[in-house]
Image 1 (cartoon, rainbow, N blue to C red):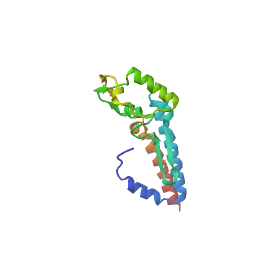
Image 2: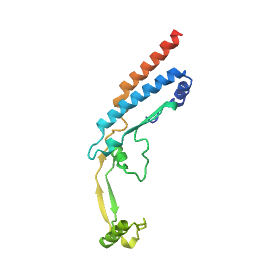
Image 3: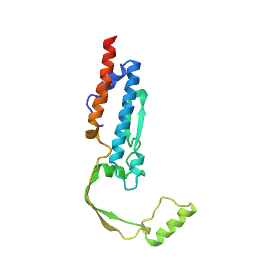
Image 4: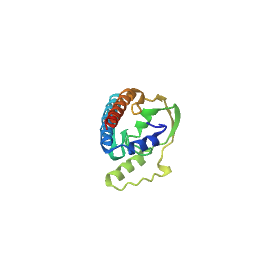
Length: 171
């Protein structure tokens, strides 16, 4: 959840909690994480199932933080680069594409099989380019599901604070 205001102040409050309350909060965050992950997996696109299978929870219990979704996904070369496109969508555009020519492709495949392939492609090996029209695609919003989970997240946090305040009042 990006753009939360007052987050640093909230972390300071969490740091000042007694150990028992921190343990309770860690279990509440873990429970919330599992429920949010279930919502994400239920709404993930399922053409191959790779996006759904890659959704994970990354818990840092000692720091009272939980990251849900694709915590290790970064822009650039990644097998799940299209998760970002699926999440946010893409605009319509025309893209200039150049592929390897047939003889160069055959040579490249033989170099890959022999293990002698390098990532250098000579411009002479490229065939004539063409324009590929890419259609617009709206985002599917399956990772950022704040609007669908606010209810049970707020209930879980409110329950935690009720327990903490009751224990503090009893002492």
